[in-house]
Length: 504
Image (cartoon, rainbow, N blue to C red; front, side, top):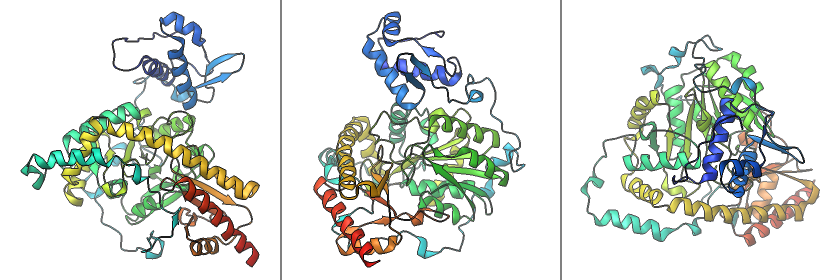
């Protein structure tokens, strides 16, 4: 290698992780060039005086994330698909904060008092997601985690400890709308380790779930008439949050490598204020935004002066390779606002999530949170801070990843078993849902009704599209279902679709 590798055998960070970070930084800074060959695992292990397994682990992580590519018989190389203009050393140039595509200066993007615009009055109730009072026996509609596997004993022990202390401050307002300090410290440490996101606790705003996070972003950053880019298809909760602010919604298509950034650039002529994306597991298709496109997206944001809203709603669950690097972890120009939630990894009723904002926006977002509801419940924040600090969160995620992988296989096997070539499955490598398209199905509403009559809850994807949706497309959430329920539910779904075809 033509760059120094510094490993600390006394560090608490494993050697393979240290080596991974060294090579990753070298690729992103341009010290390792696109297409450059790396030493073999044997040779590098000998040169560094470490085990070959350590080097192999580091290489495997880099290969799974797209930084490296392997060629049988030739060796391992830096991927050739990284845009050259993005592979420059940090600090080599300042991000373009001048006048963007809309002719708006970087200073114009900075927040002023007028950013806190009022809610719009034109809400179409029929497009909002609703919940039936009585659920069907087998529910594929809602993305619930497997709550029966939640470590309730540890959670209640921590809660009881805080209650026994008779701390009267629990009954008072904590005085910091950003959230409980130790929780923000725990989240910052967790993000640094799990998502390579480097941030200070002061940049973190604890919120009541990811939906409040999106709403705060919309109220703080969006004025009536501003253009906002959304993935097509995309998350309806984001669509509504920006729409209610009077934003002009611009749909950007998604393909097998995620958001098509070239299409986003073409839309920039309309003066985009921000782009909302779900890069780690695109909702609802489930595709992962490729590394070249991640870098291209960041470059666009820095050049145009726009913000990227990264909703990282279920990145913990990836079944092939490591989770893809967060955009916020790659961002050098403070263009990314990161959204995380505990609803998928713990339980939905907790209603705790967080924003990670650029330092210059920290104060205005803290004020926006204060205007919304002062603060999130303090007792739950204290318990969650201990839950993370004591390692319960990481252990729980590891257990759930194994469980969901089993249930994911059950869904794929059942779909292939009952439908064969008549079904296409997308997004099954990550997350807790899959998108499916059934050939020959043209009336999705009829399928939903017939499935419900058979005790199966099902969601079509039409609501996630701004334009026309494909025929026969549905979203299946499986995390809260056992293997037996999954098989039974898919069998009933096959019966519902067969019945619909017979009627036609």
